[in-house]
Amino acid sequence: MKRTVFVGALVGALAASTAFAQSSGKGGQTSKEGHTAPKQQPLTEAAGTAPDGSMQLGTVHIPRGVKANGQALAAGTYQVRLTPDTASPVAKGATASLERWAEFIKGGKVAGREVMSIIPQADIPKIQKDTPPRPGSSTVQALKGGDYLRLWINRGGNYYLVYFAV
Image 1 (cartoon, rainbow, N blue to C red):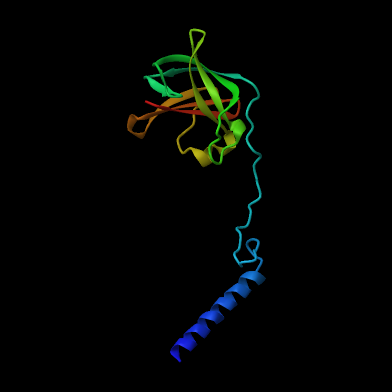
Image 2 (cartoon, rainbow, N blue to C red):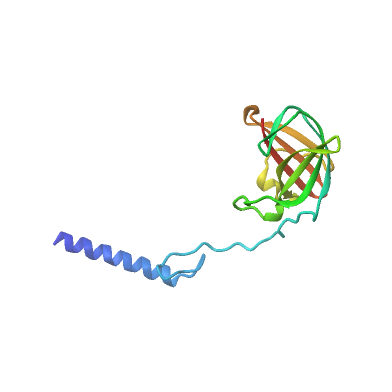
């Protein structure tokens, strides 16, 4: 007898919750199974745009030797150039045009290449908590106890970030 009452109560509760989920369209769309999909938020910002073609980003000083694309890049001063080549495969959640290759030029020759993330100015508070460099300037910061360096360039309304392994 107790088992019958328990099973009846369980079936009744499931039927009521399924009926509620199917009738309540609030908060999202209901599928056949009664699960509610999350409500889609409207986009309030336009997707970030990257400059077309290649672009000179300025001169940077890398204070110690790092790895750029798996190759050694010695400490020194380099001209940084953004190339039109997109990085592939694209990182999860990234836009292909915002993940591009950068070249580090010393003495007129390419000394190394590394993937650079382009972040529109409006998105920087969502991604970085550190204070960004002033417009037209750059900064190099040690990360993770000195195991990584971050090159951060602010140019033309975008931020350009490169992460190096030391």
